[in-house]
Amino acid sequence: EIEPVPFRGPNSGEAYSMLCSGMGRTLDACYQKAGELCPNGYTIIDRSTGTIAVPSGDSVLAAPQHRIAIECKQ
Image 1: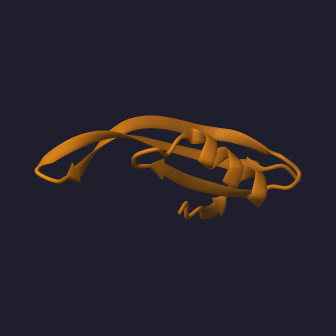
Image 2: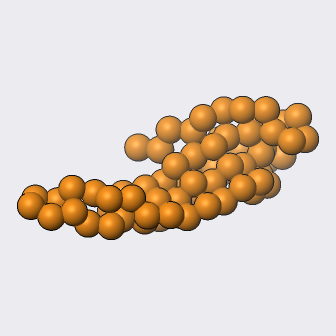
């Protein structure tokens, strides 16, 4: 489940920071959520990709971690 964190964007609009991470999660999920949050469209103000460690049984797997910040268009 993606949990957007609201904040005031650089253009004083409604903005959200979202984390899409874990196995099988892609940026597509974040973009889909952004579309739901911003019916008039949005601007990407920040995007980063990294890696997180995910325990899996006796081993640890590397999973991609994506974070985007968007600002809704008025």
